[in-house]
Length: 115
Image 1 (cartoon, rainbow, N blue to C red):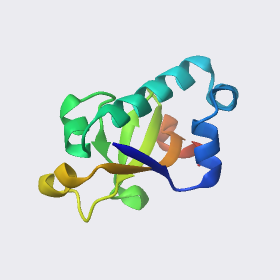
Image 2 (cartoon, one colour):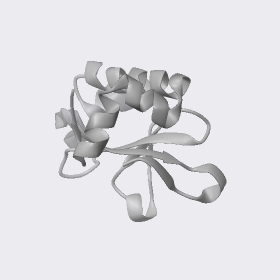
Image 3 (cartoon, one colour):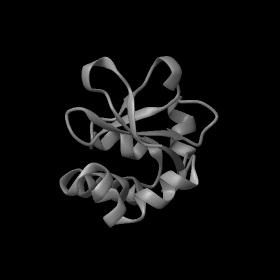
């Protein structure tokens, strides 16, 4: 699968392990890289969802249409499939995801760590 980014700033951070490690810590950076590699290894977004890796889940509210993928108990990678909708058929055809960033859900707030 192809990976794109909503912002150039996020793209630079996700592709620079030193920068990513400074931003979120070494262990979280390793897990983040692993999740991105797992996305890349999938043929389409539907296949990635079927793996269950990172417990992908649909988000609500102002992030409707996005998915959260667990990095730690509080940290989520936030992305959206580049598809017309989130129906299974559309996700089978979806070979690109667009990463918005990483957010801390701790305490019910959405604090962006990378955006």
